[in-house]
Structure formats: C-alpha cells, structure tokens
Image (tube, rainbow, N blue to C red):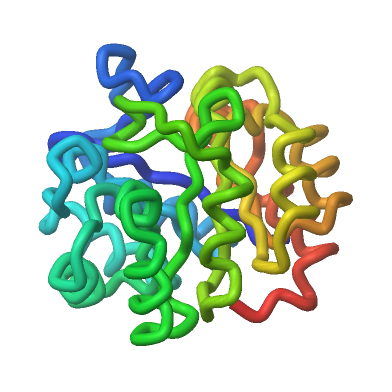
Length: 245
C-alpha cells in the first residue's frame, strides 16, 4: 500500500479542514514546498496535493505554490481541486503534476472523464468524495443523489490510474477511516482504491494495509504527530510490491 502524505493548499498556505468545512481551517505552514520536501525526506514516494481554492472556484488557482511543492518534493505528485476541463488538465500537467484527480466533473459528465482517461491513460484519478455514501461536489459544498459506488462503476472500464475514496464525515476528524465504505468501494470495482479521510494512527494504517488497498492518504495525523510517516511507509510497503501506478 502506497502512502500519500497530503498537502492541502488554501491561499498559498498548507492547511487542514475539518469535514471539508472552509470555516474550520487550521494553518500548518505558510510554505507548502517545505512540507513537500519534508514528506519526501521521510520516505514518501508520492505526495497528494489539494488546491482548496481551486475546488471552491471551479478552476485551478494555486499555480505558484503547487509548482514549488512539486519541485521540492522531487517525487510524483497527484493534484485535486477545481480541475473541470481539458484545458485545466493541460494546465496542471504543465505544473509538473503526474496525476490529476477529477471529482465534480466526473459526476457531471462521466463520459467526459472516460474520454480524458483515454487521452491521458493512467494519469487521471477518479476522486469520489462521499457524504453518507453519496457523492459530494463543488469542493464538498453540495451533496448529490448519486451513490459513490454507482459513479465509480460508470467509469471503471476506462484506463484510470486509481480511485480516491474520501468519507467527508471522517476527513480531518481524527476518528478513523470508514472501513466499511472502503471495503464496499473495493468490492464494487476493479480499479485500484486509495483510502482517504480519518486515518489517525498506526493501527488504522495497518488495518488499511491488510485490506490490500492500493494506497492511503494521510493528512492531519502527520501534522499532529499521531502517525510517523517513516513507520507508515514501512508498514504500507508490505503490500505495495504489486502496485504499478
């Protein structure tokens, strides 16, 4: 299982939100690039970036901070937040991002996501952000009537790199992942599944690794030192030998 330390960028700063609520923001650093380098130095071979301003605005925003973070990390990075058009994809790939995470647009137009996956094979990640099992959109500000598993199954035949499944109720709450939701997503489709939301301690990492998930995104727990990244990478590596993304 690949460990993805998360860097959420809002106003050029590294922050964490609780349950995707922009009013519940904690600033951890005014220099996301230094955090990216720190995580890479701790052994991470992937970094998960989120453009929170972009998610809210519906277009990529934090160009300078993201470029610097990608360069400083020196490892492949994936980015989510506000990527809604092919021009947006070209923009973020131009910033040095390896994988683009598509969420809101995937719900609006699954066929478009499939076309983009065909055009950029293994560079598109489906972002399924769920609230009570239903897909949330517009930077988590809205909840749709589409079940998370239904959306994933609509696009699973395309050459997507993976699916990031986030339970919003768990995100940033330090209360443990939604293991049942992750297992349901994993059973519903053949694409690699990356867990996100609520990963709090090494017991969570160990349990997720034992599920043979493709990856695991860790955010607040790293910033609040309840998980040691080096140890998480070690545990995850026990189940990452077959990862090819």
